[in-house]
Structures are given as structure tokens and as C-alpha cells.
Image 1 (tube, rainbow, N blue to C red):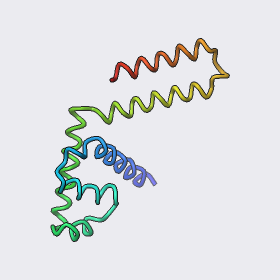
Image 2: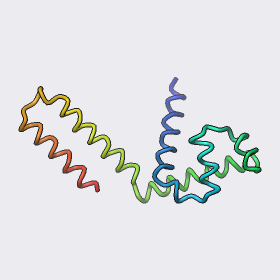
Image 3: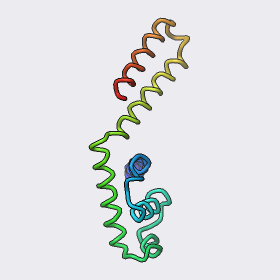
Length: 121
């Protein structure tokens, strides 16, 4: 079970990196990477479709991953996106539980979280 969870997290991470930085790849890289990550095709299927070796597809995907991770290490867009998403989720949770805390406390909490979000932008 754990290896499947790790694989799913890896695929999710690759998809997020591609969503943010995919346009910076060449058309050829994008085509191969989309087939592997988004369409879940095998290396052999992609190689046959692209007319290159299976090893060539593997190497290209590795290079794309390294390139996308390099963009993220410099720009941190995915990291910021996930952080802001988590903070918005916290605000929504507070609003759903508004009966449990005072209005003043709710406003204070939401203002604090929104300030954190603004600092990240």
C-alpha cells in the first residue's frame, strides 16, 4: 500500500510542476511528458509513438523532471500555491465552525491568516 501512495504523491508532484512550468518546456518535451505523466502511457508506448527508443523516452522524462524541479527551486510557485491553498482551507474550516468561537475571534483568526497569505504574495 505504501509504495502506491508514494507513487501517487510523485505523480501529483510531477503534474503540479508541469501545470506551473510546463509551458517552459519545448513542444517535443511537453508532448512526451504529457503522455507519460498525464496520459499514463508506458515508456514503450511513447517510444513507439514518437519514433525514439524506450531509453530515449526515459532520459527525456528524467531531464524534464530535473528541469521542472530546477524552476521550482528558483521560483517556488508550487510551494507558495500549496501554502496559500492550505491557509484558505484553514479559513474555510474556521467559517464552518463559526458557532464554536466568537465573532471577534473568528475575525481575528481570518485577518491573521489573510495577512500570512498577503506576505507570501
